[in-house]
Image (cartoon, each protein chain N blue to C red):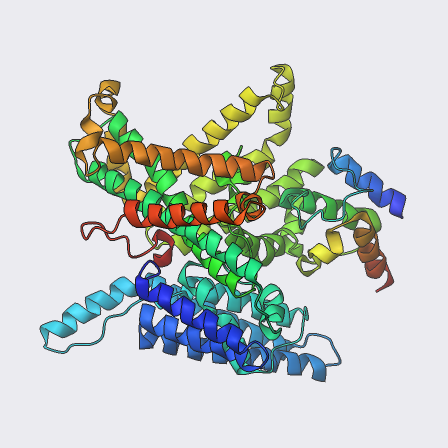
Length: 507
Length: 76
């Protein structure tokens, strides 16, 4: 059952009906649990469900043990709690690392065994593992630090861990935000359901009409080794929009479904296309992952007594603080890099991001002086436009590391980018030979423009959905039908392009 | 104490109106490095230790919340 399939839509519809039919009973939350399990099994496999069941049960038990040992120690954290915490954390992150790093080893083992006629099952990364393993770590850490009480009802805990909208491609959930909502009863509210549908429709538009359309062209150009110079640059610019439309579109679908269920999740995007620096970009892109990293990695490193002791040895108050912040950023971004994938290209990707984020902090006083000397007014449109463009280009080069798939391929891709610079190739119709004809290319441009405009309006505090809700019913329904038929007519469903999965689903 | 904290905050982030803001963290008025600068300066000034666990919106969202956190730290 893929998110873009008709079965999924029917599934969501049935769940919504049951969810609100049982709104006056305690069964409402267990409808969610049933939906979660159906979703995990049908989108992935029974083994995915087993991994999630065992891991969540273990973390649930360990959290209770931690809480018990703290209570027995009169509220102070004893050593046993520390051991339990580390046991849980190592197990939780260990499973994530195992599936991420040793998948290749497993394939080799399979090959050796299959040569001796022994066949074993395929090792598939369990669906949502990259997201719920972080949520489980956050929960363990919070219980260890006595932030809230451990959950006593395993079924409810399992409902939280497997919450089906978020298991597909995030966002990373935070217990403190989601669990209180799961414990509440939710009564049918037409407004919320309609708003949720609107958001999901917008998400499907971004995914099926924008991302998958761009994907055909990007794939066509990058797979053609004769395509060089500006055509490759053009493909990589488009790839930046593709990955944004794909990921944020998926998140919009999920957020919309969650809104229909009256459960709000952490927002994952805040108009990242208008970021004026790499640091700002990471505050606007994949926000839930950023929040997790900030809370559980960044602050614990910077405020670690040993790190603080070391940084104090560095002369100058600002530099000493900037040093520890820069050091923590490097660690965070290397983790973010390998969270995305296991090759060296992902490590370099993390370091590349860390370079810009940490130098922005370390060299901030220098940049400030330079701007004053050059009489740069940061509030002007031209400066903002320049910084947005600069950030876009920096991130574009970063994405070549992800798109190429390996360091060697990245090298080749960069080589292709900078060879035979012939801008004419962009205007002589060459780009229409890669799977999208002229009409589709222009439709793609229009869609990208629409996405940018919506982001800019959001940034200015104008929210399309709220504005639409204030309009008359006839106008609203014309827009709804136009949007739905637009997606059906212009969406990409071709067998030549695997659009069934979201780019971020594989992480 | 309130005045001392306000002075620290304003020196680090001169553009922020700390008397008015009530969602310094929730609305990302302060970025993570600003938080680090504020927390380390407060630690040095009041000779207290602020743990990573204390970096929560409820402790840092407003000037009052920061004052309350420092008071609790001084009392413990």
